[in-house]
Length: 242
Image (cartoon, rainbow, N blue to C red; front, side, top):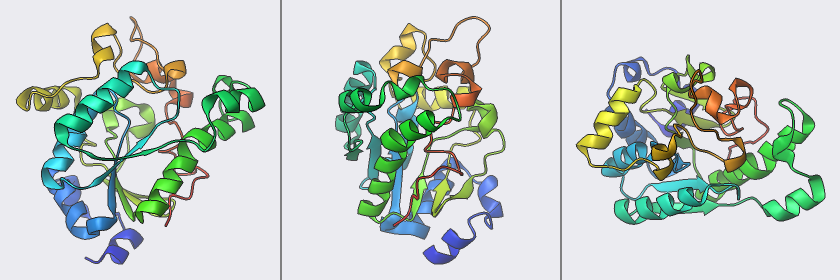
């Protein structure tokens, strides 16, 4: 199938639902070639996708959106994995620093869900940098490590979907936490260092909580209303287009 055909009708791939994660990655590489990118947040289990994909496509651009609000441990983890896996890392930052944004607009990350302030925050620190990455790298498709088990907002996530103007592929969408653990052990890969302190999901420091009794993984990232940061919202204002 040509790149144009795959981008136009990404859900016409019934075999991918039954395929292995490796087969899904190979399909994406074969279909999109140099127009394919991988994103990472360097979160708790990010080593899995980074290792899985770069075993098949060592030179793939790895897009890292640095919001300016990440934990110090995340930056050190990113450095460790970049060196260990020899990543072709492409870091993208907002066009405005966190300090300047707060001086001009206040702490937008404290805004209520579904407000103009929250929308401005997502657009500034997530969507615009990703848009820029897609344009500069001329990407048509994007490998992401989302999984159905992670949140109620992801329960029906397909292996391949169209988000705005880019095709997204989720190779490990049907993996359980146990599958993730087995993969990490098999290849002697590390968790994010904050895992040992009780974190099961890590994003910006201001919206990430430790897992406490009675909480779900979804609750540790600001609750269900804010689980999706903006990058993975189909209705988001970012174009994600070349």
